[in-house]
Image (cartoon, rainbow, N blue to C red; front, side, top):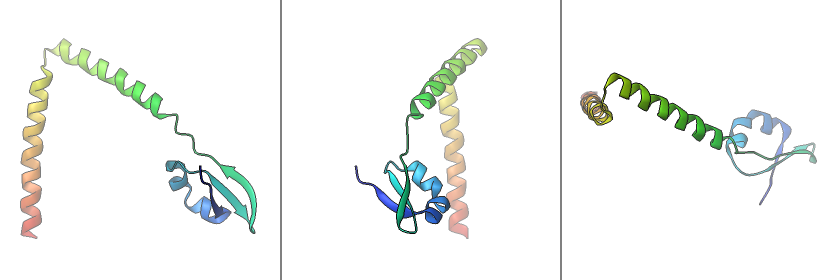
Length: 94
């Protein structure tokens, strides 16, 4: 994997971008490498687990209330469609 070299000021200024990227970074100071930053993206597994848990909880709550998921999806699509239609009209008017 290729490593990019950046100065310490640039690294600090763009830290969020380097965290989101998957490329290791060699951090330099006055041209000398002072450290390496290697992004770790292992937290997506935790996010997926949390979403699955939330999904199960939502399914249980909907079932307890006797709400059909397909009805909710249909209502959402209808509401979203009417909102999108208004935005397009507003954009054309301006």
